[in-house]
Image 1 (cartoon, rainbow, N blue to C red):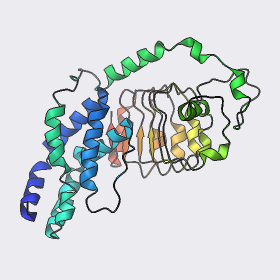
Image 2 (cartoon, one colour):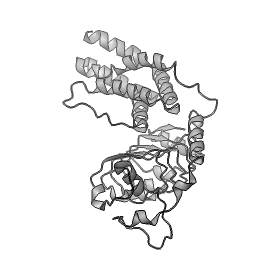
Image 3 (cartoon, rainbow, N blue to C red):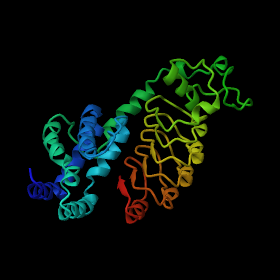
Image 4 (cartoon, rainbow, N blue to C red):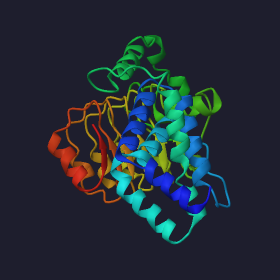
Length: 311
């Protein structure tokens, strides 16, 4: 394929209709937990966008991060940007540059295959069935697992409040130990957390974030599908760029107001009715608030700032 034919093929592919069709498929795949399909789409995009790079893209995306990256790649609001860049690359006779946009050809072909296996969209929220199932599973959680065990805290290096008569087992600190080492009965000094940049602790039934404040270099964290109702500990993690908090019990997001580097936040299916703490985050690009009682005026204010908002 020569430069001119590739250019015209890209112009034909990058349309509002095609981008809307792709994003609908991405949402349906995320809703129905078809993680493998999302990763397949993400791999296709990465392979094209890595053309000419000296190092390959990372393949460490979680389901939540893959969903965010795909939505940001194919959101219809980006059409004018893409068409402008494609025109510039064609004028500069930059064939390799045009090839980095060719992922849409493969994605459109995959979309035809993936659409056959996706779950039919319910008439209400695109995610309601998914999160209702998750919440039902949480309700069936074995109550014996929430018993408090003081013996597990004898060697904890992170300070705990000795006035508390009982500390929940499912804190960030205890969940991290369980996920990393298969046991909570292990000592971890606080400096161990200082160099961690990415974490995926989704679906761990975490109740509190005690200990996460020591992850001072954290850039991306997936805490979705847990039992969190308080995220104030995130306020000191000023390096954070991506946070995935969908499917928790969060009511207030005031702590996010201090995260000036934040680019993406998933708050879907919580109990949030105030997004004002996000209004002064000038690097914010993406917010997912589906399944929350958020005022339409707050969504409109974010969209006016050029932020992609899913609601």
